[in-house]
Length: 178
Image (cartoon, rainbow, N blue to C red; front, side, top):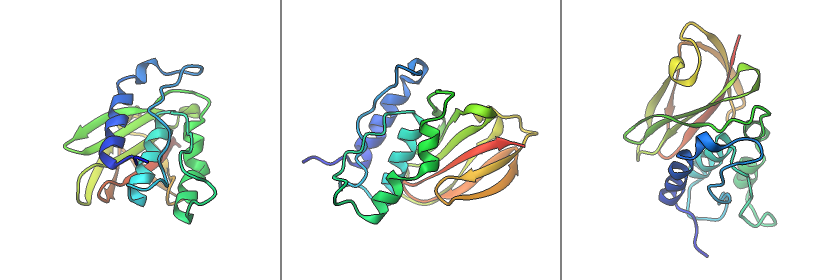
């Protein structure tokens, strides 16, 4: 069995991103099934894989043997907040909106004026990533509630969102204007 590696996963994410304008309810882009839990990537890489697929509204087809998945795999694949982004009724595929040498911001609109954001670090070391509100479809003057979908915590910010992001890891948020 050939396992998906971080390089092939990011390549598929980039290829799928090109087709974002054509995705809509009844016609979703499919970058391939999820490889979360199949070996070949770290837990953080699997979390990034699941986050990007969810934001891109890709079909979340589980590719691992669910009878023998470990706790970390189960927690990733059953994160109801991330799945809710994938299943949002607005039905707009998120896309890459900013990239700088492996530091990426992916975002997409959600129902109710909300925005899903993934800060993705494709580099080999931890670093800070910032998304300015203008780049993700919000006004810089907006104060928003920020829900961290992996930490299951909520804060408030204005004008931008920044985070330290580990190597090959991501942070995923839903921003809701107040």
